[in-house]
Image 1: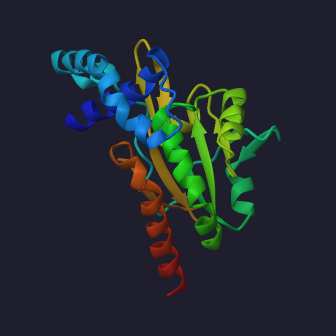
Image 2: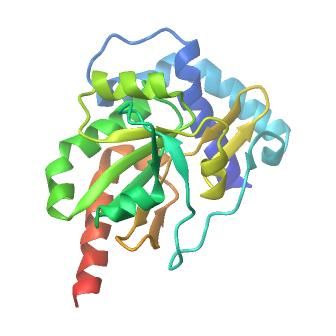
Length: 225
């Protein structure tokens, strides 16, 4: 119950960005922190609503998170590079580890911050033979614009309708808002096997990329041992 309430408030925090006055600060970390005051009234209202009604009324996880140690759920989604669709099989064919991360919405402060930290560490991912791929319910055009605006060296997949997010246990359905991808990250090995899942990313976005890199090193080290 408490976890669901935490997820709801975190997601509403992100989604509220489009409804509140934009911050002109180009530093996403300062912007992310500064939104505490700007969104205070919004979250106060949301918290009261969550307390008054059970969290399951608001947040409906579409599916259970898949188990690790088995093949990752397959998918085929349009990519932000304008190259048609990308499948899990396409990613596996590269022979690389895949960091498949789900995020609520492009251009929001938390998602911008998360993407920038992944981009900051891109060379370390390459050294670990890993590729980064984002997934959200945003349309292709929005994801393309986001990647261009942030000069990202990785691409996004558009899961409009949330079917892939559901398969990965990452979809959250909120009446009045629709279905969105919860902020979760999945590590898939070069054989297409799901090896690790980061469920609670929202609470520590600034250090998430470092956590992913650390886990990749652990998993790759175990394979080589």
